[in-house]
Image (cartoon, rainbow, N blue to C red; front, side, top):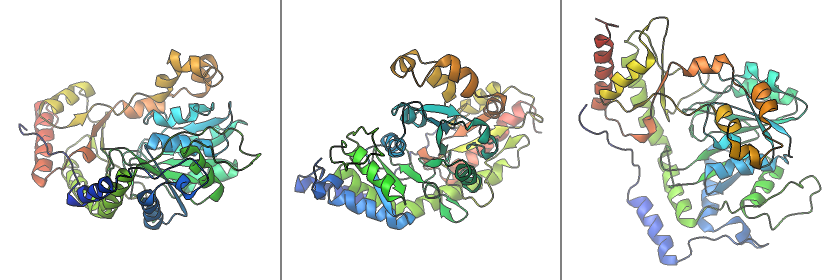
Length: 404
């Protein structure tokens, strides 16, 4: 494939005109950290939050300047104290773990499910201790974890659940939107997500107390009620500006059509690749929908005896936009970082937590050892592109004598 794939871009004159209107007004942010209504932001920020509440049937929405900020707000709203533990996936973007560290708590890594790559609910109870306060679940690559079972574990152990649904906006689990099933959820709006504002994010919750805490954390925490239950409060500037909010309003209107297009193309690719022996295409859990932020593929090692790195190099050389991995395992990334350990010594005692509690065992490592990834959200694939990707897979399989 000699030609470059077209990058995905859902912007048009609607986003342009919305931005122009705000620039003409000259008020790019409506936030003030005082006791006025401006504590909650400007006109477009408020409209965006109301629109997200309506779309996802949530009582409260809190816009932020990034989803990383959203995760920091979510963890902080739970009144997390130094030394508390939060169970989290080991195979996800680093913000999940660092958001926990920001409050002096300890990220405890648990195994992932071999088919969905989300946290495996069957392994959670082994990680729960007297210090465990919450479970942070990443809805990775475009579909939900098994919240039906995760919420059972959480309720049994009196734990809160945070959904990191950065990659799965608009996906559903048993007819409920991902990000709305847990105590707190939310989405990333950065430049390579299904809908974007450049940077940004939106947190959702139905809990008034948690929402109030997150509004405080977002805007410096200067306007706070006297709450004896909430002493571990640090406020930040996590505020979204009016231009981003106006763009977000236009993007949200396009979400259903964007997801319909992405899903249709991914399903067509699956139909083609399922004809190739030894390839494991994306699994969709019962009751779930998938919005394909990424298109994960695995090699069946029982059938394919060629080393993964050789297959990867061959596929890459054919022009397929494929990656050999997603991210490094977070347990090693976090606990082997001497700078992080020096800043958070109470949270990151390597001898105690890396070797005993956080270490990811052979199950997760085995899952990712035969993994490939196509960044589906980044490109605007045509039907011809999908056919060419399939043809390139066929060529590689034939060259390795894996197919006639």
